[in-house]
Length: 238
Image (cartoon, rainbow, N blue to C red):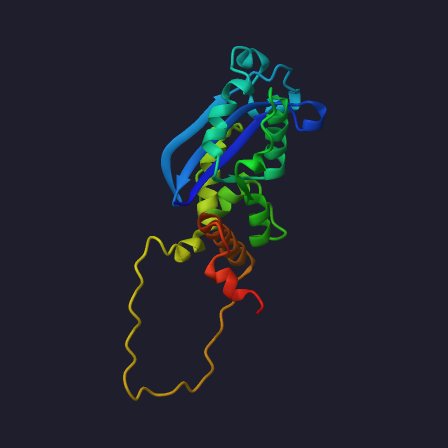
């Protein structure tokens, strides 16, 4: 079964190297590209002050966060959720960098996110599909017709919910490859003595976004089979 966890975080500031911390984590689980109903949402005490710039973005102040659990108190539950899944994150380097830093602070340290899950960056995917255009979460929602009117401030769970819809729209072509959910259709009968083609058929080539979606699907098949899929083996040079 294909399992995806769409994840978003909010932080005390932009620079993990300056000791900024995670203050909110929101996750939405998808199974076979459909919401399973399982979510993860926690506010966290970062044990430091929230920068004014970050506060203006998410509205989570020091007083609100003071009585919230520390990351160490929720780490096991989060890792159990993401273990073996594909993480879908917008601008993944940012969130993964903060998560790796939090995991490193644990006693004992728990390693890195990449040791628990694979990661797909929807910002990179959107840039392939819409080069030269704005590809923020708000811009993608507007472009793809997704209602984000409730997003007055950034919030990890709300943003994860919006990103789940964006991801499904961006990768809609993958459903045609979901061989587990569809029975093979019989080939259409060709009448005897049918007229031969008089023109060369038109060739439709996949664009960059379709190629990226196809590669992501093959990666998922490789992980499920614990080997290179037959499509990958057949496309490799002899």
